[in-house]
Image 1 (spheres, rainbow, N blue to C red):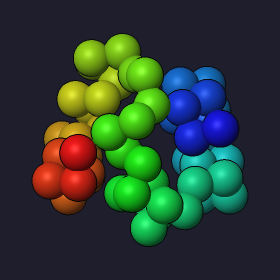
Image 2: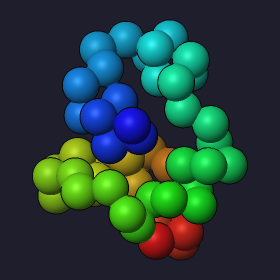
Image 3: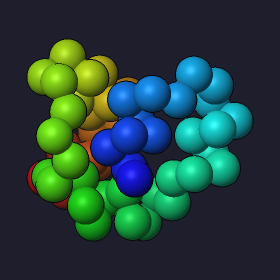
Image 4: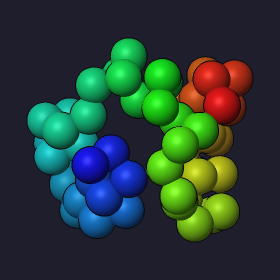
Length: 52
């Protein structure tokens, strides 16, 4: 579900509704995401890079 939300959600409010910060860190290395999407998230949230 996290992969789909990250790839398809259009509004920040939806991200807040569907994603849990702790869970996202735990599973960050698992979702198949386009390189630019993953890099964008890791630039915005550097702790994700460390979690991977």
